[in-house]
Picture (cartoon, rainbow, N blue to C red):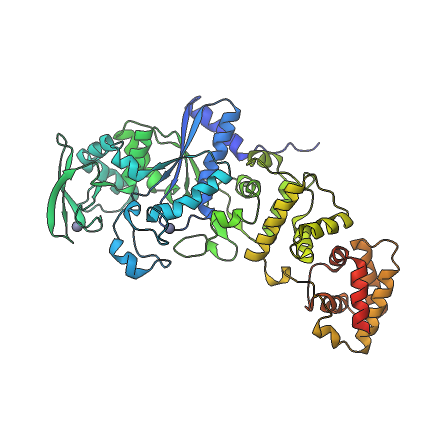
Length: 511
Ligand SMILES: [Zn+2]
Ligand SMILES: [Zn+2]
C-alpha cells in the first residue's frame, strides 16, 4: 500500500495553533529592520506568515497579516555597502530619518522597503505594512512604554535571569532620541514622569539634559519593544528567525515580559532557519552575500519563488542555488508529472497568473540563445522540437525570464552564441578531424527523423567506430558550431539548431 502524502507543515502548524489558541481571529505579524538590502532570506519570514494566513483562510478562520518595518531602529554602524563620509554622522539616528543612498527615496528605510513591498505585491503576499516610526509617533506604544519605565527593575531581573547577562545599573528600557543631534547613540535616560508623559535624558554628544514628551523622543530597546508590540497590536502568531528563538533569545525574554507586564500572551511561535546562498553561507546584508527578492523575481515567476520557500518546513535549512536548482524549480511548478513535485506546496504558492507551458526551462534557455532574442524564431524551434504551448503570452513571459536568467545568473558553461560563420578554431581542424566532421554530417543527413536521441546515438556510434572518446567528438562538434570546447548536451543542441544547419556547418569544417 502506498504511504499517504505527509501533511504539509503549514497544515500541521494550523492544527496546532487552533488546538492551542482557539478559533481566532488572529493577527499574524512579521517584520524586519530595513538596515540594508532586503534579500531572499528575509522573505522566508513574511512568506511563512503568509502561508499560515492562507491556510487559516481556507479553514474559514479570520486572520490579518501585518509586516512591521522597524524603521525607527537606529543605524548601528556604517555597513560595508555605505559611504563612510556620508553615513558615519548618522550612526544612532532612526533609519526613517536618514537620507537614502540613491537620493530617490524619502529615507534610508524607504530605499530598501520600497522594492521589497513591490516584490510582496508581485508575490501576492497580502501583508499590511506597518512602520515602527509611525507606530511610535502615533502613541500606540505609550502605555507599554510607561509600564516598562515603571517596571524597569522587574524587566532587568527577567533579562538578567533568562539571558545570564549582567544588566548595567544605568540601563533603561527606553532609548532616548536627542532632539539636537537626532541620534540615540550617546543618550541616557535620567528620569521620566508618568503624569506629564515626559522623558528626561542627557546626550553626551551635545552635552545637554532635556525633558521632552515620550512620544517622539525615542523607542523601547529591542527586547522590550517586541513584547510591547505584541501587546499593543494584539499579535497572535509570529514567525521569527532562529537567533530570536534560541534559549535565552528575545522570544524567551519577551514571552515573560509580555505576560507579567503587558497582560498579553506571547504569539504562537514559528521558528525558521536562515536561507544560505549556495557556497557563500547564510545570506546577510552586511556580508554582502545576498540576492535580493526583486533580482530573483526577474528570473523566475513569483509562484516558483514562493514554492522554493513553501515546500520545506521553516526549520529546514534551505540554500538558494541560482543555477541548477532554479531551473529545476521552474519545471517542478510547471510540470505536474515531476516526481519530486509537492502538490500542496504548489497550491499554497499561487501568486495568480502562472500558466504552465510544459517546456523545460533548460530547453527554453538553449532555444532562446539559438533564437538570438527572436520570439518568432524561438516558436519555430520549439514547434520543430515537438513542443506545444497553451498561451503565446505565457511563452513570451517565460522567454523574458530565460533572457534575464542568462544575463544575471548563468555561468559561462550555460552560455553560447551560435557562430554565424565557421569559427576560427574549426578552420584549424586537421585531416582526421575533418574526416570525422564529414562522417557525422553524412550520418546525420541520412537520419529519417532527427530527434535529440537519434542525433546523440549517431555521435556515439561515430565515436565508437573510430576509436575516439565521446568527449573528443563532442568537442569537435561544439568547435564547429559555437567555437567552444563545451556546450549544451549535443543531441538536444543539434535538434534545437536544426540538423540541416548542423550538417552544413560540419561540411564547411570538413572542406
Ligand atoms: Zn534610494
Ligand atoms: Zn545630541
